[in-house]
Amino acid sequence: MFAATSLAASPDYPLLNLFWTMLEIFIWVLWLFLLIKIFTDIFRSQDLGSWGKAGWAIVILLLPFLGSLIYLIARGSSMHTRDIEAAKSADQAMRSYIQATAATSTSSTAEELHKLADLRDRGVLTAAEFDAQKAKLLA
Image 1: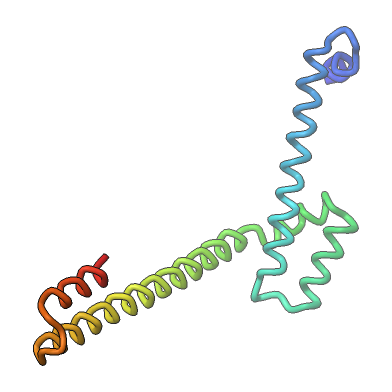
Image 2: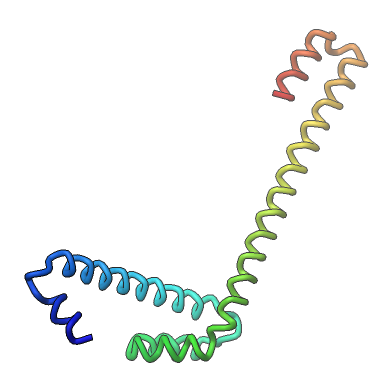
């Protein structure tokens, strides 16, 4: 381990220095993503009160490595459950929105066609006018 550290700091091995720097940057990016994930989970969690959320945030801000490790041990298994619940909730909201929108546009088109057919049957519209309006609605 000591030999690798001294080689990484040595100017005789510039490629090794590059790899070492890339590894350090990669680990820091992973660390930032982990912190973002933990803070997102803390503030999205429904089972924590405001004092619990504030307490976890303070612990992680004051002792980042130890606080994150403790959080992952204490609440890590439920993080996955909360992610799944949030995804299901978002999926259900999207499905209900799509169904409501599709039902509205389909019913309004059908209603408009019915009105046009009624006007044609009463003689207000000619067959050519009805066909033109029908094509416009269906386009």
